[in-house]
Amino acid sequence: MPARPLFPLVMIQTTVFLCAALFAATIAAAPATPAAPALPAAAASLPAPDATPRLAYGFLLKHGEKLVFAPCRDRSYALVEDVSSDQQVMRGLEMAGLAEGRKFYVELLGVSDGETLRASELNLAEADGRCQKPGGSDEAWLAIGHAPEWALAAGGDKVTLQRQGAPEINLPYRVFARRGEVAEFGDEGADGLVAIRFEHQLCNDAKSAVVFGWTATVSVGGQTLRGCAWQR
Image 1 (cartoon, rainbow, N blue to C red):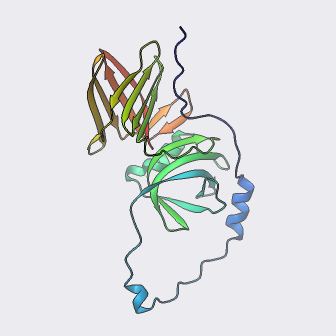
Image 2: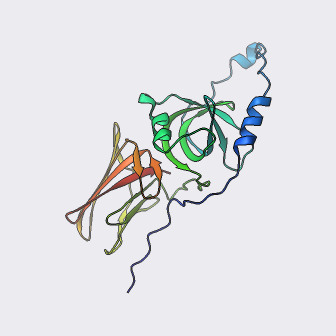
Image 3: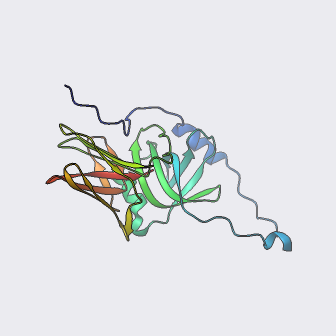
């Protein structure tokens, strides 16, 4: 009986929604932002905007010294400011092949004020990639690896691990324990303890040509699987 295919993950296709010329023309034509008028006393007392970092999905282009971000299916754009520790965002983009005029699909954790996206974390970067659907309530993490091929999805009510040449493993999902830059999960499966460890370090998956924000290690039945992970 043929092995079941691994569930689809990152698709490497060339779908150009925006182009370098549009970005360049939009930036060059953008007027200077006028000074903001003084706020009345009532407005000044309004609560501060939400500063919780959230995942932003879209396309990124390097134009001169600027990084221009355009959300998926949206004609607006914002300039990206790397506020990550140790320049993690820029290092990840350079690892993925950042170059003048080259389009990337990216997922960045950050805070946007409409004109600037202050990115604190790179989740995924793929040259010439297409927009991916944001994860729903049934997806918190995805991970992949090779030699052997394997894939993991965690979220909703289960954790699913698929390995080439081995039976699928399904475990009840619970939120991964977070300790600093590490996220962990463990439970007993048919092959014994399944231990999952994600570390917040840039991970270059050479086979798919995608850079992810986390490394992944999965131990099951005396086998250790290594690869990359990303949040949904």
